[in-house]
Picture 1 (cartoon, rainbow, N blue to C red):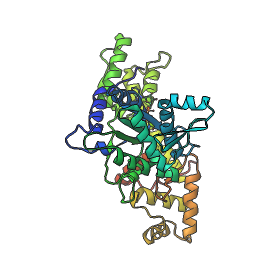
Picture 2: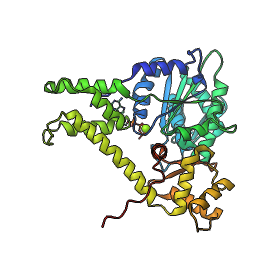
Picture 3: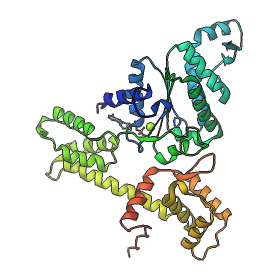
Picture 4: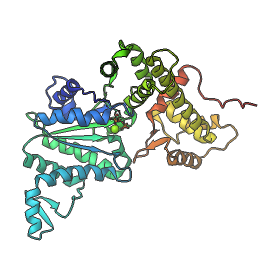
Length: 392
Ligand SMILES: Nc1ncnc2c1ncn2[C@@H]1O[C@H](COP(=O)(O)OP(=O)(O)OP(=O)(O)O)[C@@H](O)[C@H]1O
Ligand SMILES: [Mg+2]
């Protein structure tokens, strides 16, 4: 299916990053959150990146989830180093020819010519400054899944260095370093901005607009062009289905493909109803999966996860209130801090992990969808989920 571009959103964000918006604070860093699979990475790479590039901005994109085995701090440093090496290519090549292992630029920064240099916190600032000087234009650093940086010390250091680089390079007259951080979990991204010690304290997180109606209209037009006999396509039903799919194009595409497949027997209703039915089923399946994950946990693990879901950012695993809560949920069990720690570890060690932990010991549900699931059940008086009665 053809890509649905969002040029006006990209232009708006680029304006903000360049500090052209009268209000707003994107020149200090733009933080964007949207749920998983809703098109963040595609937008950043195929809409925002070209828009910034057309404004003569040097764009560096890195996805901290691209390789889960690598330290996020290294991934950030490497992305910058790779760009820097390209700009210094000529200098470096000459140095290599002359048999030098490294070259020193502007008297301070040493660049490893044998491969991609590893840059630490202090030199990261210098590397960005050198890149800005050699490129002679502003730099935009787009960090996808930025919350992942908080899971390692090197990642935290890199974030602090980026903040420092931003403060050193940007002047009231020019935004030389634009930072865009995106993530699938607002709650985790918040840890970058919301405490005094957080690297980007004071910045706020924006909800990245999801694809929405414009996208569904685009898909509707494609279907009508390819299958004129289906005109008029009931776009409102498709929109409802897309929303039920959590605005995730992948599942929506698959369901449309299936509903349009002549080999699939249809009940005589329009294919739109087939897509809607698939969306409802997917939603029920997702909820059933979370429910069975939850019910499969040991009592203390359930209590800990419940507490995380219930108090969110205020979660303190071992405070008196938390311990009292676990005891109340696990009547008859003796609860100690060690047992709580073991429960937290086992929730984190599962594949897929149920909880997320930052390098500073902050916790959150790994999948933000779990918060929504919890909220919905709680609002409708169905929490905690009870085991299905056994069918005899
Ligand atoms: N603008 C678009 N038009 C058409 N399809 C899209 C668009 N954006 C995303 N998609 C589809 O949705 C899928 C998910 O997109 P993407 O990887 O950008 O989401 P994401 O939010 O970054 O997901 P994750 O949370 O897994 O990183 C893509 O593989 C693509 O098929
Ligand atoms: Mg992504």
